[in-house]
Image (cartoon, rainbow, N blue to C red; front, side):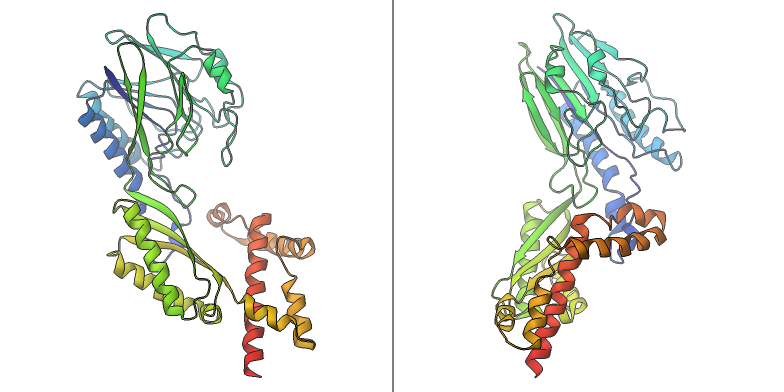
Length: 420
């Protein structure tokens, strides 16, 4: 039996733009997470005594700020080559030939696929042929797979490709191809990269996205890592996921419907956050907390949002030994029961309540257009690094803002009515 590791999308030293906007962000843990995940990858390869490692693109997030990034990567990979484990790398859109201006001499045993044409490396002692091609530029729109060579007879054939296959939400459609395109090559295993979500597209032959080795933001939740692939004498294959990340991102939703005491809300959110922490096997966890539901505590939460968010942060830090960071707390509660009662009033207050209640972000295109124009002007004044992280003018964002304002207005009117 032969074993190899298939990894992709390391994004070493990703700049993580916008992190400085969080006053309490554990910057050291987050910035060092990709390096720690790479170290975990190297340790796993040595522990499992694999024959070789494949990295299917995006070793880096872009051009190196300085040589430290390249030095760290090569020093880690040298631990493999010095133990007879070869490394095969296909460059992707983030580390394409045209993007990386600095370079260091590669240790013997690290092979990078040509960006000019598909290239094949042979491991004749174990009867394996590895075919691949690197990106020459960051935006490759042609079907690279169509030019890959036919499978070598009487060998185990692996295709290495950075691609979106048929296209995936949230990812540029680079090196597009179809599953049938890949199958036609008669390879035994396709080691893909580019898509950060782990996905097995096919098992005969195996066509696999391992996902990235470390989540970088809240859209990349859960465990991240690589695949350990076992090849048996009859060329049958088994593939097993191995977690490598040192930090897990989680989305935590807490329903507080019917809760009247804001301290009970704090307790419920803290309990949910701890459940996420335990689910992540005690890894340092970055949580985005969503609090929702019609409740009596709504007015207190909305009228003094900063206080209750800090109460939640304190409770979570206490229950999880400061190993959970609340990246964001979204309070989406409502006081719908009281609103329905107020809307039935036959007076100016009732008229105003009914009007405000119609201000739905999803259904009110006129207000969306006004808000989009206002936010467009604001976005132009933002620094570049904030523009990149804040898509203020998409429909989903404007709907969210309108609905938040609607809830604030309704809550204030309810408070005013209660005082009368």
